[in-house]
Image (tube, rainbow, N blue to C red; front, side, top):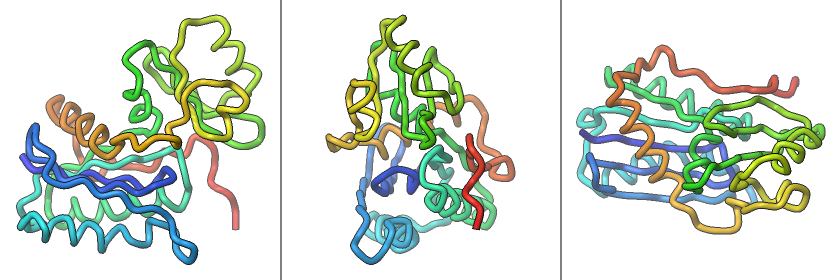
Length: 203
């Protein structure tokens, strides 16, 4: 089984090509001064497939990050995945960025990402809790034995480990989660939707 996994929701773009347990290719693209990284998604996918002599028709499934994260990135990721999966008639699986980041800890992870307006997108106790007030997030941390994973901004407020400060293999982690979800018979591309825990900005 060949899986193409990609993520444009977080601060870097990840594109991974996987064959069962083997990672065939893993690319990371950062923002440039003139362009947001999602602008390079299609060309990076094309390069990854070409470098591995894999035709799009040879893919069995697509996996993506559906958010929360950059609204532009969520839209780009979901749109490309749906179009490709529909055209190729293959499965597509969406995974939240919170679940992906939870895999950075093996010991009771709590993931909190900046949601602005004094809120955090929260994952704990193995589920998404939504956009939660920072005071409540701090109370939960103080009352539990959590391993906190967060971003640079919230790390200054709630502590923990910022995923932005190390080169974690997030694309590879995404591909592993996708493979597990496919084993549970998921993957209808028509059900692939962006995860907007809070409404996108207007205008």
